[in-house]
Length: 456
Image (cartoon, rainbow, N blue to C red; front, side, top):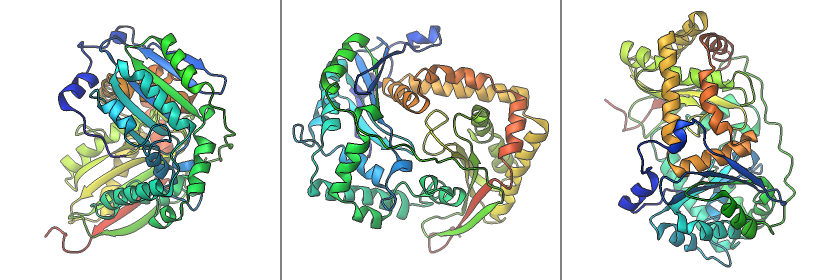
């Protein structure tokens, strides 16, 4: 969904803490209280009385990987349908309740989940929970609503993919090149043809299958009493019957054993670009957090190794960005195999392969010699500082708690993230660089410029 425009001043007060540092920062641990309803719904509550507001995230265990074959983009389309209202709360009701007090709400679809987030004065929490339960229970399934949101999603694709320089090829095209299984490789935004084929019957079946309490986690953060939140959730969600959630498909894939390459053209871009992806193991792999640190070492900001080597020293790239599970999330918000992605704009004077091989030289040096200890410490410190900055916002903290409870089975993974980062050693970096970031496990795309937009 496109972001909603907030009331600037009041939203600023809602999203920023009232004190200079969160109260839980002294202990280094978020307070977490968990409840499980009889119908399988999980509730996570974290108290923080810095401001009289709340952050809410309702996360469902369905995303791109679980949408029906032949219906690419269906999970994203359904996310839009959730904002079309219900028979008891017509379209616009949810917006008025949240935004009327200066709050904001949104939703997004990822590989392994779909989330619905909101923040508002705490006085709005009970009616918002009622509204969330109402749309879990039933939606306004109509051809008119489906056609409306189908048009909205198509317009998103036009704006973000078809008529935009580079068109997210560093996500959609790169995944299609690197992965073999349909669940991992297909375009989660969807094709117009697949979107046109979606029917009301399929939308209702998708809701009845995946939008059920035993496939959902609710997280509430803010100026709340956990027991009171539990009573409200039990009152509004407790009588929603559980569903029969299908078993998840096996989406695991081995590392690639031969480099994969594709050349594309772009009529909207003015300079050529490249995107490189290395296949990564799932989050339960012992190497996973070392790879997260390695990704930041290579790609996070102007101090990163790729920026220093290719932008500053070699001057073959104009810019470079990327990371683990980029651009769809981070180390905590992924539930399966992913890519470590490097995306760069390169100068036309030298071929893209030159910059790709320079990247590989940086990687090979890490695999042989390991990272500089001071640099590694600085990267880990920045990763933790960035994380604490994100979760200072109630709405973002609630989302992390809900997602980690869903994907990791434990919301306390949010508390353990800093220690997982701290535990990564130079030896770990050497090992994972040598094992995963190889030429054989590398897939990359050279996106060349065509047409009148080309820079002269």
